[in-house]
Image (tube, rainbow, N blue to C red; front, side):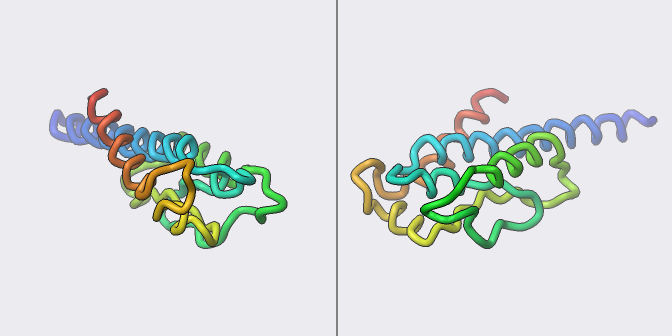
Length: 126
């Protein structure tokens, strides 16, 4: 293997790890800061590779967080740059209202704040 290819492979490894770490840190921070009445919104922060999740997991009355756990495991174990983007989706019907500040449990734009803080945290580790 040429030195150039070795360096390119190392750079890809570092970039893949950074993207994975940011996605998982964003997910963790969103889970931690999402207001809770039933837990459904919190359990619906679902990371995915290549395309976003387009429907909520379960219902307000019945959810188990399995899709979130599966998404986390997939991102943690299998992300490569060639797969494209990582998405962290939440499709409960009221997530935009929560992010607009409808709950006293979280400030408006808590989603954007969680993403900014996650990027800063991972950046500080690099």
